[in-house]
Each structure stands twice: as C-alpha cells, then as structure tokens.
Length: 398
Image 1 (cartoon, rainbow, N blue to C red):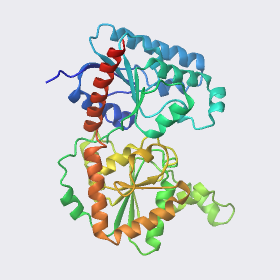
Image 2 (image 1 turned 45 degrees about the vertical axis):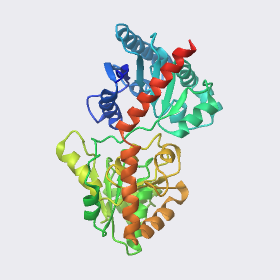
Image 3 (image 1 turned 90 degrees about the horizontal axis):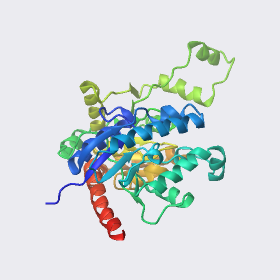
Image 4 (image 1 turned 90 degrees about the vertical axis):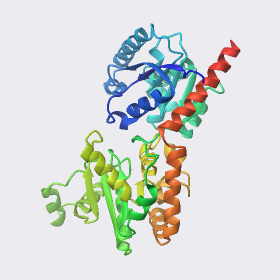
C-alpha cells in the first residue's frame, strides 16, 4: 500500500472550530488527515478579510506580505511534498520550493461582481493578486464550474492547471443516517420549509417568505424555519406612522412588517454548532424539513445545499454561480431563474407534495448525492488522486 502524500496545510481561517468560514476550514482539515500525511497545519495570524476592510492598498500589500513571510519561514523545515492552501489571499506572498496547490471557492474578481475592465481599473491590486496566484500555483482547484470558466475567460492560466472539486457538507459524517426512518417520520403536513443564511437579503429570505406565504394562501399548510440570521424589527414609531398614513413602507419595510406578523415563521436565530443543544436543534429541524429554500442572488458555492442533502432534503435554489454545480435538477433539488423563483418554487412544491412517492424518490436521491458527491471524504479522496497524478506528470516533464 502506497504511503499517503505529505502535505502542509495553510488556512486563512482558524481550523479548530466549525464557526469560521461556515466550518469549511474545520471540516476540510479533519478530512485531509484521513487521506494525507499532514505534516503541519498553519493558520494565518489574521483573516484576509480583516485586512482588506481597511481599503488601503499599501497597508493591504504590507500586511499580506508580512503574513506570507511568516508562513514561508514555517515551511522551511517541513518535509512535505505539497503546500495546500485554503484561501487565495496570501498565496502570492508565500515563498517555498514546494509546489503550491490552492483549493478555494472564489478569487478576488469572483467576489466583486462587475465588468472586468472596471474591476481592473478600480481594483488593480486585486487583479494583480489574482494573476499572481494563478502563476504561482502548480494547481488551482476550485469548488464550482462557474469559477473555472471565469478564470479561463479573464486570466492567463496554463492548460490543465484549473480543476473542479466541490466542497463537502460542513457536518459530521452522515453515511449511516437512518434515512428511511427519517423520511417516514417526515409528516406530510404542514410542509416544512427551511431557509439558512446569515445575510438574509443576499440569500433571498424575502423570496423564501413569499413562497411560504403563497402556499398558505393556496390552502397548503406550510411553515418556514429560518436559521442563521437576525431579521431586524421595525420600530413602533415607524409602524404607527404607516398605519396613520403619514408614510408608506419601503419594499424592505413592507417585508419586515409582514415577516414580524406572520404566524407561519419559525425564526430560530443563529445556531452555534459548537453547542450540543443548538447542533441538535439544527439537525432536528433539517430532519423534518421537506425543502430547503435558497433563492440567493450571490453564492460562490452553496454549502447549505450540500448540508440539506445530507439530511435527505431536496434544495430549491437559483441557477447562478455555485448552486449551478451543486444542484442537479430532479436529482437533489431544482434550480430556477431568480426572477421566477417564487412562481416556480410554489408550483414545484405543490406538484411534488401531491405525489408522496415522487417526493420520497427525490429526497432519497438528494441523500445519495451527499453520500457520493457532496461530502468531504469523497472530495478529499478526489484531491488526493489528482495530486498523485499531477505530481507524477510534473516530475516526468522535468
């Protein structure tokens, strides 16, 4: 049996808790230890986000350089074969003779949606860092197809350097989940819908709310569980002024007013997976959920989609960016155009719930997608096989 490849793992976020970066560094780190000989795990002294928030390019360059030097020093005495980086921020500043592999879900241009020429003009540092990252890495592994296409379109990247391997669901292994019992216990009424997201506006909570509202108006008893966000409340003065017709609500205020009065909303707030009681509450909610609603307007990958599938929950999402790679129509959910999401989601839920066998087939298929494609064990094993082949190929070319 071949010895596992030796790696140094560099993370731009803490790896000791499932709170940072939605738990990705924590669960990725755990999975890497099962497939690789992890010689060292290095965490940057600060997150890149905390640095770029300053908006000062000179400061950003200086701080990233400083962190890169620290990482480079720690790599000097390592006998690892490869340096694997999660997070692209410091890659251009890491100096090592070992091949660097980036595994991430975005690049700078990916998180600043605008015309590329405008991006280069307004953010020359970020554009330069993107290109330097592609130049320095021996291999760039991205979590979704949209990012590979973006990089190939707008940057100079050697053929074969870009690969796609999805992230896994950020939950403990669910390979022995009693899915048959869970689906049997999943009551047909009320229809349980769940929304998960911190940024409730960007992730589409108003659209998810409207789906549930319309189902109830159509006579289909439905509940919307909301996890991970704190939706603001309108002030009493603002509500009174509206009722007295001194002012009209804005669209956002109209949603907040309806949301606060809706009896079908179960607002659970933020759930800390580090706390057993809150982790159990999260699991229990997904076990009884019929559909995850994720009408996002921006999502590099869509981790919550994979997490829902881990509980046999089909996901209804928008056909953009990351979700395009995660959700396969009719297999683990459905994707709809953003502007038509409410109409099509209401229709699909109604059709599926009227045919129990159709729903159970979809739910079982969603769980199978998690077991075979959307979990960290599978993703890291695929990475291991890719690196073995790539290193052999690279050595043969030298």
